[in-house]
Image 1 (cartoon, rainbow, N blue to C red):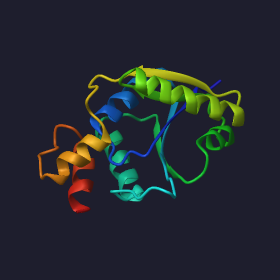
Image 2 (image 1 turned 45 degrees about the vertical axis):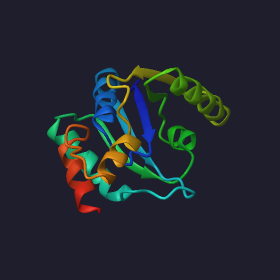
Image 3 (image 1 turned 180 degrees about the vertical axis):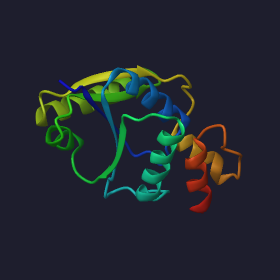
Image 4 (image 1 turned 90 degrees about the vertical axis):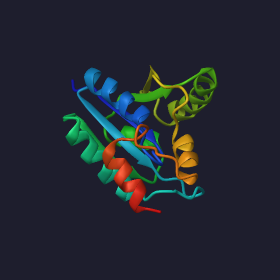
Length: 158
């Protein structure tokens, strides 16, 4: 049986921390679905379609061949069920992340009881999309926090 995992997030923008989690997951699972979730109640800083392209290019440059990237506007548990995905990947920076993720896990398991969660420890606990956006707003160099293709996307969307 093919082991499929989903790694959902806003990825606004996709950071090197996200990339680290994808690298770890791609070694354990046959297929990894990176899914950019679209929340209609939140305004994105960067186009989800452009971010998808940047993530796909990053996967090519990193030679990660078992990752597929999607933009999805529905419930992630439904996407997982529809695509036969058995595992949800989440990165944890601290115990607050764990508590937050466990609450979401319970809700997702109501929709799709077969979905198992796998947590990966984040290597850089300070790195987040919010931090990158904040630094960018002050014209701080963010090249060491995001993959090169994402950086190109972020710079063009000012």
